[in-house]
Image (cartoon, rainbow, N blue to C red; front, side, top):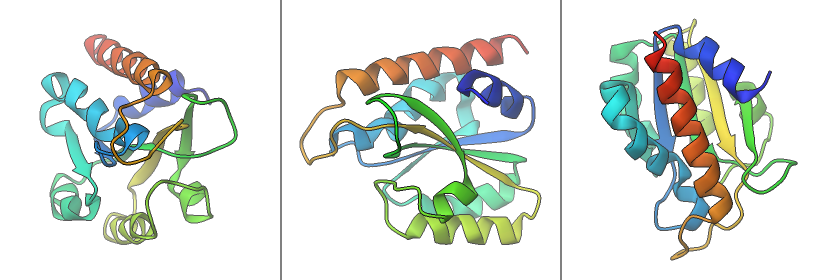
Amino acid sequence: MDFENKISELLKEKSLIMGVGNTLCGDDGFGPQLIAELKPTLGKRAIDGSIAPENWAGYILKIAPKNLIIADAVTFEGEPGEIGVFSAEDMLEGLPATHGPGMGLLFDYLMKQLPSLRIIILAVNPVRTGLGNPLSPEIKKSMKYISKKIINLLDKD
């Protein structure tokens, strides 16, 4: 399923979007920077997990969303800046991310606590993630596209 259809489906239900990444490391900052753009529209439904998304586990459990959408830079087969939508299972089965095993532990914990929770990874294929780099033009373009689509989908409600 393509990005727009999948996100449209998810946003119809109680959803949280959490950006994950380090804004000091180039394209790894995609998640937090997307949240900064979405926060004025989404309010408490948009959270910046930054480099410690596990710190938000209590908040996520309190809100008990139907869907948790994780915005993150993830290396997958595709063009730089390409948008991908993956399941938590894809990540747990070895889809490479710019984060270590902590994400898998967080996913496992949340799914045990909220058995009906669906975790979706909204990924962009990074160009560069080195310390001190800015977002690449490809990721900036993808981020603007995603932000605009999500805001437009919410405005239709």
